[in-house]
Image (cartoon, rainbow, N blue to C red; front, side, top):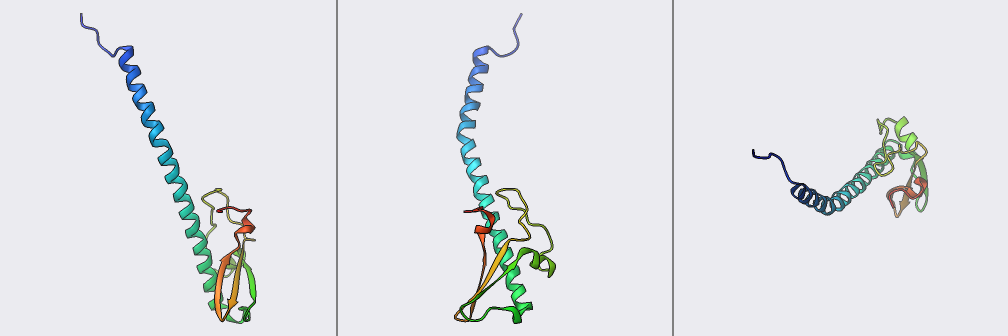
Length: 125
């Protein structure tokens, strides 16, 4: 009678090859996931800054004078209808707070829009 199945040595060989493949692939996948989260984070920050620019267009009378800056919050952008959804930080998986501050500055009559990331306890650094 002929025996069916694999020997212990064959099974061990397959397991060793799979383990080596896992060791080689895991760091690459982990790095790719981390990079993609960071890119998504930057896209979300840019989206918030774009909403702040739209806010400035709608509220020109509130814009700062030369050399000064004003602070608005994410909550204000939501109330004004410029952001319609909750935004989740892909790095921490937590929602961005409505108290997140966005600075609108005026330097040489050029406006700058900056999300104050230090308000997020160093997230995304």
